[in-house]
Image 1 (tube, rainbow, N blue to C red):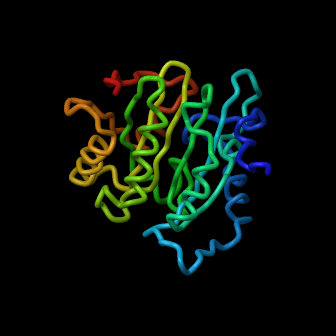
Image 2: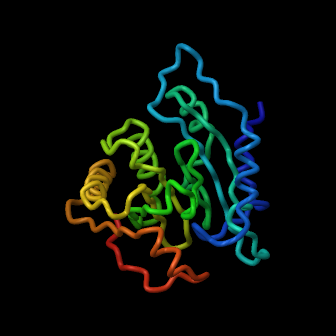
Image 3: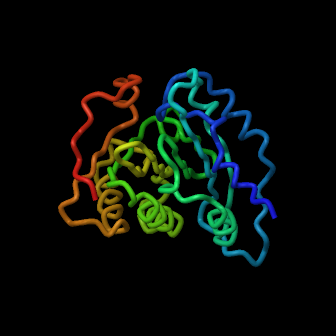
Length: 226
């Protein structure tokens, strides 16, 4: 039987800009509008929130496309069973070559800085040595779905990014100015990744990202890798 998610293995038709890149946002809204209502079978174990899973890929050398046109919505779920039915058919992040991203966000929140749930928030970023992305991504999303961060609705979503020399994962939250909540998310992230106690995380508000956005990231902080 053909696996409909095998398309990710040959997804050269999907390009991706950097997170939050300016451009038309209508494409993303259209994809969301076409989604049927999510039905959860009575015997399933419901999660506290429902989620969208997006995929994006950028192919160097191809013509520029607005960021939202490069997002591929590959599934939605609201129960433990629906999550595993989707996740078990997906390639793992470390299996991709480069410039690929998975974006797991609560239903109603688009994986963009400008989304109303994200615009006043920010993200914790952990840079990873090559080969660790799949394990760290699975640990992170299971913790997120299991509400281990204990910050209520403050978590918006999470992203894993595969690049040439290093990979990264990030956790997005709603309120960049809430220092106590930011700290709790950061400490929980360290724990779920089973990282060294001295691991340094990098936090950046989406507002700062929008102000300083360029095609080539500059002034990137040197962050120890797991």
